Image (tube, rainbow, N blue to C red; front, side, top):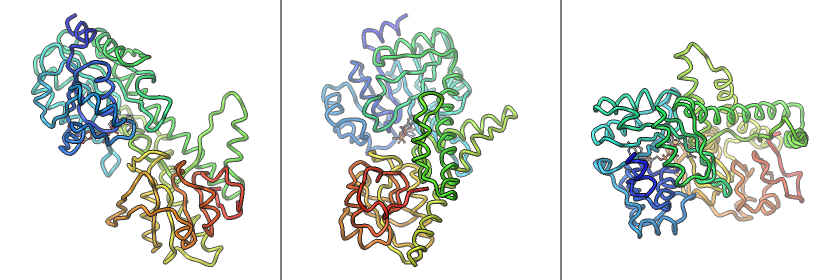
Amino acid sequence: MKLIEKIKDRSAQIGVVGLGYVGLPLAVLQAKTGFSVMGIEEVPEKVDQVNQGNSYISDVSGADLREVVERKRLLATTEFSALKGCDIVLICVPTPLTPNKEPDISAIVRVTQQLAQHAHPNMLVILESTTYPGTTEEIVLARLTEEGLTVGENLFVAFSPERVDPGNPQFKTHNTYKLVGGVTQTCQEVAKTFYEQSIMKIFPLSSPRVAEMAKVFENVFRSVNIALVNELTLLCDRMNLNVYEVIDAAATKNFGFMPFYPGPGVGGHCIPLDPYYLAWKSKEYDIHTRFIELAGEINENMPYFVVSKLQRILNQRCLCLNGSKILVLGVTYKENIGDPRESPATKVMELLQQEGAHLTYCDPFAPNLMVGDQKYKSQPLSPTALQESACSLILTAHSAFDYDLIVEHAPVVFDTRNGTKNVKRHRERIVLLS
Ligand SMILES: NC(=O)c1ccc[n+]([C@@H]2O[C@H](COP(=O)([O-])OP(=O)(O)OC[C@H]3O[C@@H](n4cnc5c(N)ncnc54)[C@H](O)[C@@H]3O)[C@@H](O)[C@H]2O)c1
């Protein structure tokens, strides 16, 4: 087949729609593989950055991006007409929730409309955005076939979820199993051949729906297990037990147990959102996914638990939240990365603001932060800043923090991430989640 030949000799033109945390690394990977890549992005500033070789995603090195841009392997544009010249299109746009926690697939719909205008025979379209089972066929395929193309004959459509773990130094896209579910056997074959050029391990599946379900299930699994350990933390707090000691003890069993750790909530663009995609879809089948709802409820309660425990900590020192200076350490959703999306720190800070606390924060990965309508700037971590605060509250345990310094100078440290686990001196000043 012509398209397979074009893939194998790298003459196929690739289009990546959405140059964010998923799309930009993927575009660079394909360009480094030897393909000519067109990045289509609706934010003009991102387009300019890419074309100047400036990376705004921590998992993409500036050197890698500059190299592919200078060699003219990657070009970004806001123009959807560029899709006309693409043989393969990878859709990597966001899939957020509405305020009522229902799927908002409007970006996928908009891209599909644009794609339909520029679709041509022998095109491979792959959806990489995380979404509910059925989206690829019900939304993308349905619209594209209205253009007179026939799936499996002159149009190839598949779902292949991105599974990147931002900041993970060991596992990147190229060495993580790539799930691929094509609409037909031929779609599967073309999509598999495409990914084989750049990714070490491909895991073919019988349909896009299975691939969509597998991706959401992975994130439901994490959400449920984190909720389980968060619930255990509430109990350990009441029973005056150290939850980390309990987890470490259970983890000595070398089968049938996998440790998960508690925290002030869940964050990022995946775990707090994706499970609700499945919960929404399942209602169409008269199934109410109670695990998903329960996990969401427990995880979303954690910021409230952190604030009430902080109140207790201050109360024991004859202080109250109203008027107290609280120094927040770490505001991104996970350690050592700069992504603030859905970070539980924002929720905790919002609740602390409501109680009248005076907030400052320090985060080497997030120079600025909006909480409600208030703008904050990251402050340097100094002995004076620590001493002047009633409590230092660790919400994200970046490894760049000097935990010995923090514990040495803060009157009390409320550590919601066990970042201080290796600190030896003044442990009496540390309060853990439980
Ligand atoms: N971030 C992760 O760790 C991760 C991991 C696996 C899967 N995912 C999934 O991948 C998808 C993308 O996530 P992300 O983190 O890259 O999001 P992102 O917000 O970082 O990037 C999406 C990009 O798409 C652009 N965009 C939005 N609508 C557009 C449109 N209509 N046309 C062109 N560009 C448009 C945005 O401006 C943005 O630059 C989501 O479905 C997400 O759930 C994310």
